Length: 396
Image (tube, rainbow, N blue to C red; front, side, top):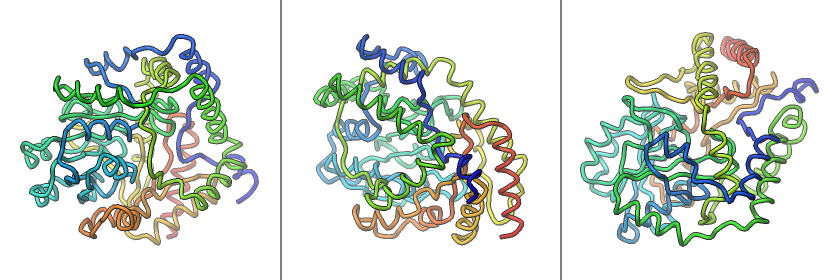
């Protein structure tokens, strides 16, 4: 890669945590945080707060009082931290296949495996809502948990994700929308279940003042390395070496902690007017959809009745070789991409008892490439990327 392209390397994800974010977070140390009334107004419901999506899922599962070792239906094509939280709760992942068009859990596969399941997790992949009506039709009396880590402000039939199930959780860590460092909100309309969830979270460890300060400063430093020019010069090469050495994507285990005042304060600061940033990202998606010529790959699309936040833009290739060639070409042009969940089947087999009955999900893991469209990019960045993708597609 030329030095200029290295300096201008386009980050695959958006770590939006600059001086303003650091100031807003540290203000929470003085005030003790707030109740983040903006989230409460958005959903007309007071959330239960934890430090992470994993901690939230763990709290929900523990509060459902499922039998020890019970099977939790979870899509294979989702981050392995979900499986880890299931195991930490003393339960067993039972993997479900996905649809190849929308990347979301297959209601048909839920129906096939329904007799083995105690509950189902519906992950709104890349910000595109699952077909919740189809899921409700096959789950019947089973509790359904929405994983909304990627779907803030997405809607299904004019109703926000997070309000479509037994319980739901969001994640506000860096790399996702809001980029508050950490933080997660649990929504639950059932008073009894919500009370049990809140009681479970009350047993979690609180953050200390020094740990909040250290986390805010380290998040600011990491975010700096996720922006030009430092991403190409330092962040990418160091992060790649660490990931290979430490297998950072596995992320086994987690801290069951309450939310930090620093994270809560930043969430409250950012939620007001955040839809404007999501609309920028939606416009970036529309630009790519209008400019890309899909040779050898398929473009993503919104399902009928859905309004997606386009948290990620996924290209699905006809085979692994074409995906990898596209990733290599874009990197040579100064555009970083992500082979999302590339090894998820191998990891699930090795650690979580996956038996190989999710062929669509396995195919998606080997053929999906995420390209950056985050709101921090400029219009000319999206235009440059569209030209590079079309150029590569014509030659692969």
